[in-house]
Amino acid sequence: MRIRSTILLVSLLSLKAQTASDPSQQYDKVEVMIPMRDGIRLHTEVYSPKHATVLLPLLITRTPYGLAADSHGYNLALSGAYAELAQEGYIFVFQDIRGRYKSEGQFVMMRPPRHKGDLKAIDESTDSYDSIDWLLENVPRHNGRVGVLGISYSGWLTVMAMIDPHPALKAVSEQASPADMYLGDDFHHNGAFRLSYGLEYSARMETSKQNEAFDFDRFDTFDWYLRLGPVANFNKKYAHGKLPTWNDYVEHPNYDEFWRRQAVTPYLKQADVPNLNVAGWWDQEDFYGPLKIYETLEKFDRDHRNYLVAGPWNHGGWARGAGRALGKIDFGADTSKYFRENIQAPWFAYWLKDKGNLELPEALTFQTGSNKWESYDEWPPRKGVQRTKIYFDKAGALSFHSPAADGFDSYISDPAHPVPYRHRPIEATYGGASGWAPWLVEDQRFVYERPDVLSWETEPLTSPLVVAGDIVAHLFASTSGTDSDWMVKLIDVYPEKGEKDPPMNGFQLMIANEVLRARFRNSFEKPEPVPAGQVTAYNIDLHSTNHAFLAGHRVMVEVQSTWFPLIDRNPQKFVPNIFMAAEADYQKAEQRVYRSRAYPSSVELPIVR
Image (cartoon, rainbow, N blue to C red):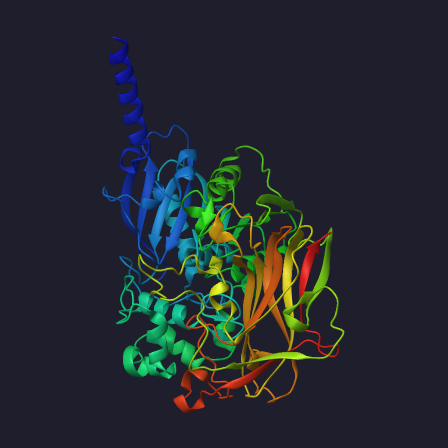
C-alpha cells in the first residue's frame, strides 16, 4: 500500500512538473495582426495565463529574428529565457517587427527615429506605441501596466519604446542594446569596420524576410575572407548591390549624418521610465551600447530610475543556462540564474505589480577574478578608486614607474598575413559549430609569440590588483605608412603552476580590448592621413570592467595592427574610402610603439584602493 501511494505521489509530482514546464498547459495563445498608424499590420502572439485569478501586466518583446516555437507551437522563451518571469505571472506578447517574418511592411536595419514634426512618419517608437495601444484595448484581464524587454536588436527596440513612451509603459529592460553602430557596437569600433560580423549579419537579415546564413565555401572563414581580397570585391562577386546595409557601409565610411541619426543617445532626453540596463563583460557584439545608454540617461535621472547590471557574460549569456562558466573560465556561482531569479524577476514585479521592495543598488557588477557581486552608487565608481598609469618599459616589462630610458619596440604589419582574432579554424558566425560566442575568453597564447604582436607584462603580483571602471590606453606610436590600425588588449596572465585545472596554468585571459583606426585619431567625421614616421599620440578607450588580478597573476598589455577577419584589413596607405581600396593599395608597414621619457606609452587603470 505504501509503495502504491509513493508511486502515485511521484506520478502526480511528475505530472505537475511537466505541466509547469509545458506552456501549452499554462497559456491561451492568440495570434493577431496589429494595425499600425500607417495601415501596416504586425504579426503578434499573445499568451494569457489560463488560471490567472488577478489582473496581470503585459510584458512585450519585439524582434526581427522570428518567434521560435516549441513542438506545441508556443514561444520558446516561455520555458527558457523567461521561465522565471513566467513563474511570477504575466501576459506575454511577442511581435515580429516590420518587414520580418510574418509582419507586413519594409524592413529597415536600425530604422532611424522619425522627425517628430512629421505627423505621418513612423519608426520603431511609433510601432511600439501603437502596439501597446491596441493590446490595452483588445487583450482582456490586464492591469493597465506594460513592460518591455529584449536583448541585442530587441534591446535596441526596447530603447526605442522609451524614447516617446506610451503612458502605460511602466518599466523596461534594455539588454545588450547597441547605442552607436559606428563608434562602438556591431558594425564598427572607432571607425574600424567589423568585417566578418558586418558582412554575415547584413546577409543574414537582408537576403530575405527570414534569417539566412551566408553560404561560405570554406569552413575556415579566415581563409575565405583573405581570398576575398579588398572588401570592394564583396559587392562585385557576391552581393551585387542587393544588401542595403552593405551599401550603407560603402557609401558612409566616415561618421556622417547617416550614422549620427541612427545613434540612440541624442534621442535620450528623459529617464521617466524605470530602466534596467544589462551588459556582459565579454559581450562579443554590444558591450559599448548598454553602458553608453546608462551613462546618457544618468544626466536626466532625477528620480533614480536608471540602473545598471554587468556580469561575466557574453552576448545575452544572462538569459540562458546557469552562467557558472564562460569557455574555460569558472565563476564559482550560477551568475545567469542569479540574475534571472534575483534581479530581473523582482525588477518587473516591483514596477508592474507593486510587489516587494526594490533592493537593487544603482550599479551591480560582478567582479571577475575574485568572483563576487559588488554594489556601487554610481558607475564608473569614483569613491575609493585611484586612476593609475602602468607603463610600457624595456625588455617587455610593464611597470607602475615611468620609463627611465628612451626606446621603442617595433614589428612589421603585413595585410597579406594578418593576425587572426581567434583560434583557427574560424567558423562562420552563425551556425552550431561556431566559436563566435565565447571568443573573447579564448587563451591569448595562440598569438603571444607572433612577431607582429608586442607584449609587456608585470612581475607576478604579490597582492590582488582590483580595477573597477573605465580603462584607457595612451599610445605613442609611429608607422611607415599613412594609415594604421592599433589594437590594445589588457590581459590577466595566470600563474605557470598551481591551477586546479592544469590547462589553466599560464592562461592569458583578455579583460579589456579595443581598436582605433588611426585616420580617425582627431575626428571620426573627417579622416586624415597619418604622417609617416612621425610619433603620434593615440588615446584608446578600452571601456569598463570590474576585475581582480589575483596574487601570483601578471598584468599584460598587447599591441597589434591586424585582427582578422573581425576587423577589415587597413591598407596602411591612406585612401579616401577603404571600402573602395584596390589590391595595390595594401602594403606592409613598420610599426613602432614608444616607451620613453618623452613618449611614455601606458594603460590607465581605475585601481580600487
